[in-house]
Image 1 (cartoon, rainbow, N blue to C red):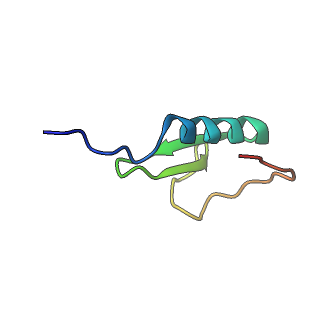
Image 2: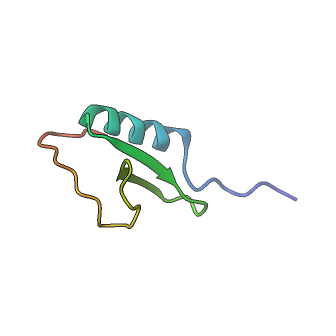
Image 3: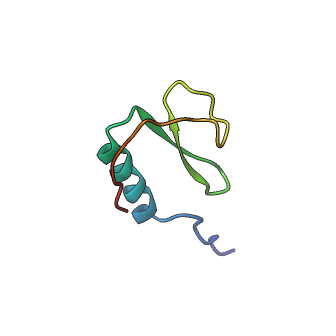
Length: 61
């Protein structure tokens, strides 16, 4: 039995981590079992599209 193809790469995770650090916002990274990577506010309900971030700058991935 072969291995499944990965749904995200180490580079994908590194890009997300750099983006969160660069923003300086109080955020956390959530990776779901299906490979979806989301960035949400810490302590906020993790409902997609509901988190609000006050960040005025560029995030380069």
